[in-house]
Length: 185
Image 1 (cartoon, rainbow, N blue to C red):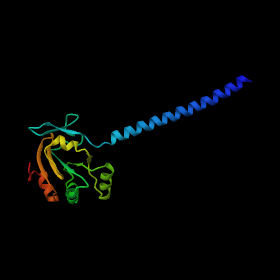
Image 2 (image 1 turned 180 degrees about the vertical axis):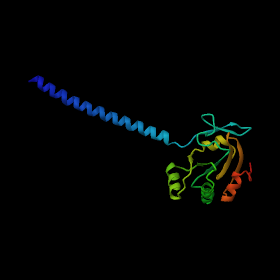
Image 3 (image 1 turned 120 degrees about the vertical axis):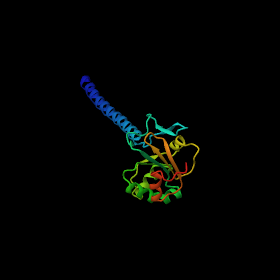
Image 4 (image 1 turned 60 degrees about the horizontal axis):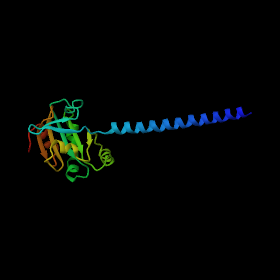
């Protein structure tokens, strides 16, 4: 009789053990998935000024975003949805991007939160490649002596700064800047 009761207890305990093991496994999987999602959701590819004298910009892998940009020029636009002048130029910037699909443009956002950036982009139907950089790390690594937004950098395929401009622009001025026709650097 004692043996049957012991066997029942062992069966019940083993059932609970299996349930607890499954529960712990699911918690670990959800933690790992959350970590993986957050680590892959980060859109920033931190860059730094490798050669201040020649303004060569590289990413942490030692190249300039080669997996995404391998063409002659890339324009980096620093902006934020809270910036009055940035908002003024957004439709012109969007038109420039849409009307010049061969151009390569990276928007670096200094918004206060990813959610506010995402809401702003969705509300305005902007489908841009955006790097969220609240701490302004990228800007400080590219050119720590320059403040204020909006501003744009024009980079060659090696990441060298070949142009700089500051202030709100029209679509035509974006075209001129991208074609290296205006520059105040």
